[in-house]
Image (tube, rainbow, N blue to C red; front, side):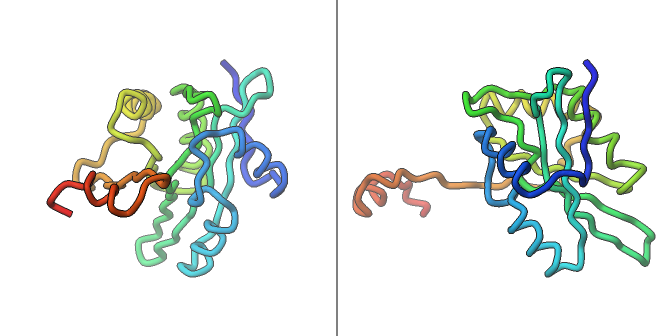
Length: 168
């Protein structure tokens, strides 16, 4: 399936409109957050949108690029992305789309592309990992997975404390 790959040629309004179509859109994939982080850490930010043959956006993300001048190395970092899950909860992208993402950056804009997906250790998360591997990404076993505690906001503090294990 042919993909249209758009790198750094999308305005803020279009980005926000496309991003709102993804259930996994999060603060780490906003222009405001990535712009601030890049400025603080002397990095640059790149944006990519990948559309299928019907013009539908199947994945998109911000890539923060760090230049390590001493090593003449550029590392791209996708934080809690790329966006892959549609509003209906299904995965919108495939390994060829993620291969297109990798191809757009590795060897041209960066030497290494590090992707930290917004994925849980459930069936959907494992499917995303399989898709990433099929696209040529490798798991870095030396990096510990993130641990996120998800709590309901419609219960009392007392009820929350009851639900937490004794280790907290």
